[in-house]
Length: 363
Ligand code: DAH
Image (cartoon, helix red, strand yellow):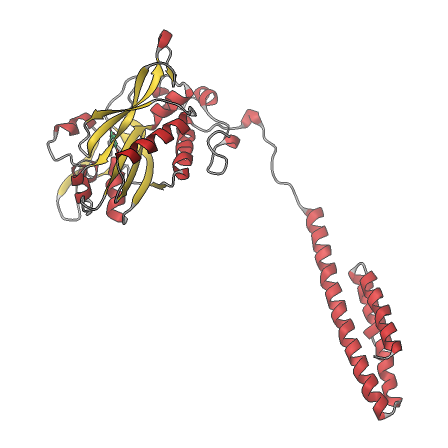
């Protein structure tokens, strides 16, 4: 490239870079590439040159023309982006409304407790499963090793729906599930092992007093694998109750008990004190029952198509209201479902401070 083209290129490059808006960039473009532009004028001189001169000069000018056109294009997109950024920054509207505590709703203690439990079990690798509130006798009882007429069914008296015909043409009464253990069956029927699930949901029994309501909530855990044993059951429950009550050395005791769908079965107790009529979790040498647990009965595994010689595991279940009452000092179960706003304002939780799997239980 000859000296004059080199310096012209430097000159134009400076001008393009100095153009700080689209209008001045366009002025530069016209002054260079327009009809009377500097490169256009030079192009016109080619005709008067000798063929040799024209060949080199013409090539150099074309290269320069392309380079400058490219440079202008680049600068143009940089300026357009700059302009868009400036518009976005100046035209953004803040549509959020600042918090007004006087109007803020409250999270019901049941929802809060479920959120906390989900957070804890998610951290342990459990996933959340669901099942229907309206169940059939098979999933609520029979598959769980409560044969028809078994006396253990009487402990779970529930509400029956009018008789309907099922897929096989049999007449049967559906019922409102008495426990979330039915979800164990539904999950195992529809998924391949290993199983590691937690379930939360409404359950129903025909009871009503200070500690029983016809509808309440339960949680159910199920873990099935080839070598899952009672040690895993104990470790899992201890870690979970200690995390939930936020007491690192909370005493936990397993007391032999009977549930048709587990063998062996155990009730879960946590340490407490009951001095001066007040209940304190974690202190003292008294015990409080919080749920049932055990190793899933071979008959239950068989009912779900699993070979008990290959698969084994544990299950446990407990009442969610009870967990909430104990953790948050709520004395009467019935108040959970009275929809009294004063109660909810007192025992409810700030929706902006809900725990989640990112923040953990304590935040
Ligand atoms: N389903 C039982 C009930 O409602 C609670 C229960 C006991 C669940 C033992 C379990 C278990 O998974 O292993 O009373």
